[in-house]
Image (cartoon, rainbow, N blue to C red; front, side, top):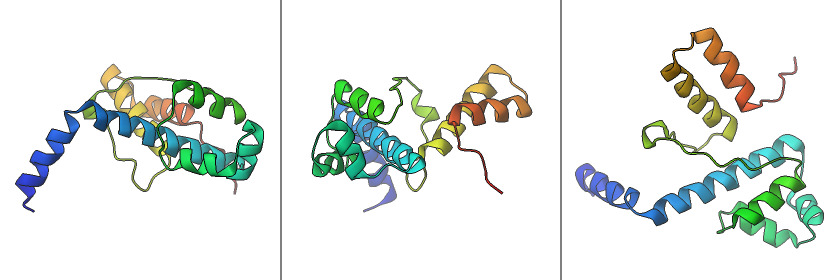
Length: 137
């Protein structure tokens, strides 16, 4: 497949609502998994907290279609909240091979650049928003 054809197919996919639904679901699944990892919560433990089977949690982490209500229940089981937000397509960064903290940091930095923050201010805001665990020496 040529690069030109690949770009055409990508543009076509990105013009469909289904594509962006999949993106949102996969973003949520990645963020959920990253939060579980940071908090030391296994699939089995999350399932226990929710009163469901471990396989159900595995399915959700695999990117199964979830309702907003299910997202809220999952977040509450991890003592977290769901925040729904919008971003421009130009702000979208690839999540492949990264945890959500990096994505949040990059998005926060871009927002603050547009608002005219100084580099030191952008870094402080990005770290605060990313909610990264403190580095242990």
